[in-house]
Image (cartoon, rainbow over all chains, first blue to last red; front, side, top):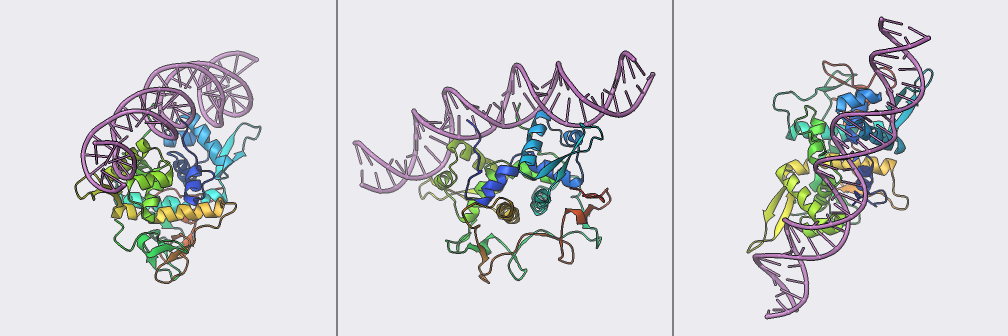
Length: 156
Length: 156
DNA sequence: AGAATAGGGTTGCATCTTAAAACCAGATTA
DNA sequence: TAATCTGGTTTTAAGATGCAACCCTATTCT
């Protein structure tokens, strides 16, 4: 049977996963953030099959995460570039990277040292903050007008 | 051929996606954050096939995102609860939700209004911040000791 | 000019994965 | 004791993936 899709789910997380929630899409976006733009470069950097890459790029373009730009002076040379929507996945990618660095560190390699161009300092850990800027966890949050997200009793 | 796995990738994003990067895993974690703990509840809330749910729960337990707790007084009744590692996916889930709310809003439904229990105010948008707390984008970041993340020229 | 090569795909095939539904065994409930 | 709930496993058909082979249009080499 076909994989289930969540296009019309009333949950925005499900809808988001529908667009970038497969094994390859977020990695493609990540590499696009690194500066990769060409089909062959994605293919080599990711080690992905060409037909799958075609499919994913097309889907990302269709969903407005990437745009396909013709850069061939006389045709037939393209670049896939992030749109604003795609660039807006930055916090998701960084949060995922930090989670991976924290919980599945590479045995013999230091995590990437991402820094801010202005200050030259490492970026902060991505956190969820309340209105006052205080970091909060899943236990501190509730859905307005509904039973709580997380529970009074230890949710773990 | 089998799907490619990234267990041993030197990229922490790839390793993270290997654990929670399929269509269902993050949704399971999301619902666990909502308070869901029981097999049947996950099944009904997500509309997922039982065999797939078994597989995903087992994988999440194996990866330390969930833990399986026997709550049957005389056996055979379980709960799947978030570990600290699982709870630590909170920023990822929230960032994804906010991205979905912004770029794929439900046509006829307001996005979930998540609030901080302390202040009663809505939570902030998840952002990447530099050392001074200033929000930054993908264009403001570089990898220490490497060519830049993003490029001098417009990366979109 | 003609041949070789690079970019960007498409096609076929074998193998996995998925969804859905049937089936199962140990507790609980009626 | 029979029906039900929980948490699974098995079976089957339809999709998705990975790989290799092939294609067409430039560009580059000889």
